[in-house]
Length: 320
Image (cartoon, rainbow, N blue to C red; front, side, top):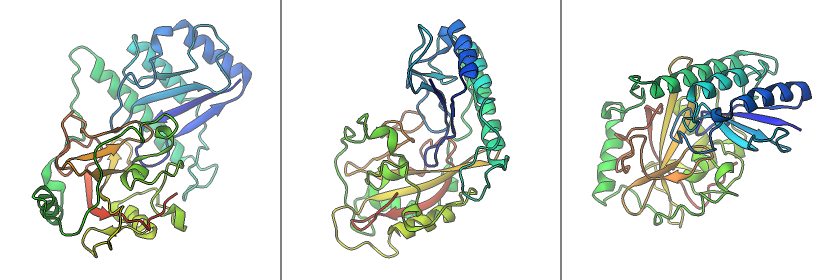
């Protein structure tokens, strides 16, 4: 029997995950969970937006305790007992080893990456509790202001709205069924969805062509990966005619309490709105406040408050 814990906190980069195989540790955790069945929320029943969505727990070889589901969420907003759910989430987070590494500039055994991830997770669990507490209304730190969007991008977005874009743009009608299929959705992130390229790898810009985005994940560092994969900045130059000249908007963001960073993409649709996909969640065309995204520069983007412009994909683009 094995138990996997995944912290659902990123859209672009891989979520921290740890598998527990020690029988004694699994038994202890099962007993805690069995004593608090109302702490377990159904997967996808709570928060599903940008940023921290809770901890996902999977018994990868089946549950050994009667009454526990094979998969469930903690501290994600869907549990009947939110306090017990948060308490158990804190306990499970502490089982994640401090030598966790993504393998990009942080050596195995170096605790900097893990400590930042775990500190962020603990703080986000507490933040979710504040949102659910009576009188604890919490304003999202990511509600956007138009001032952070470059003037050139504003002009390009206005031209799109007027149907006079700088370059030819291919699009397709809103039909999310393909990307929301259970065999595709969990394996493809915001980047794969943005360029409409099924990779089943949680794709990173540039990885297909030997480039690794530094953990600092500043906009220009993510953009280098886009160029490596064959995208161009919109209008510099225009992509040649094709069938997949999809237009995407790149944003980066940071968890303010720890400085942990991530990236996120939005894709332009033929109907005139934008859609996006948070990590392994479903594709959608609304922002974090529930409004249709007419302009990604001024919508509610959660933690992704840094704009880096518009990019155009093409038939020749390949990603991994």
